[in-house]
Amino acid sequence: MSRNPYHTDTEEQVPTLRNSVLVFMDILGYSAMIRESEELGTQQEVLFRLYTTLSKEREWLEERTVSQQQLREFIKKDNYALKAFTDNIVLGWPIRDDAECELGSAFSKLAFFQLQMVTSGFFIRGAISVGNAYVDEIAVFGKALTEAHTGELSLARDPRIILTTSAMNAAREHLTHYSEPRHAPHTRDILQDSDGQWFLNYLDCILIAENNQGPFYDEFLKHKTIVEQMLQQHRGNPSIWSKYAWVAGYHNYFSDLHSEHFNDDYKINVELFRASPTLIV
Image (tube, rainbow, N blue to C red):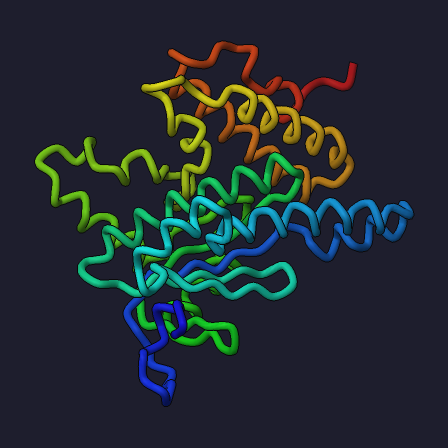
């Protein structure tokens, strides 16, 4: 029996669209990374690092770790389906009620994945939508895919996973379920950017054990280090540098937001990504 939630248990498997939370994401600058490795003669090194990172993180996304496999023994179907090709990854969560549970699951799953990819040097851009979709190892289809793919191309812009209009509307509806919306889980999962886009607050997973053992300080420092490296590496290429400058701004905002945990040692030096002009002498 297939564990794919889009598959029925009948012998004749008829692909059927289901209302879903769908995510389309890719690795930022994938083609440029390949070209650069060719120019520098580092293809094998980059391939090994990419392959090792993706293998590890896909194992976790596909719930193939030992602890995840043990949990899966208690349910007949997975909660979501995954399709990966080259540098693109699509995940779909069929919706059972009002999508609050599925969006929450997507946020937590994606936050961990994005943080682990970034700290390994691979920055993610993507979009989340809500609508009809079908996802399996053969085909990905539906309005939700079109909306998410368009959002990734035209709205995400920076290394962020944004919410398209349909996902934003669903999240807004979920906030009304709480007498005090600030207590809703989504208020930590999502941030609003200066251009109005809602995006996944992936650094929040650093605080997942906040009450028991405190933040994962080492992971936060890894994030700081890799962003600083990218800012210095791409200073001569404004279109690429600006994307890492965005991540640096987000990193420092998150640090300020949780200043009870992080002092200035955890922040990225603002001189590395200052946007204002300066005198040449």
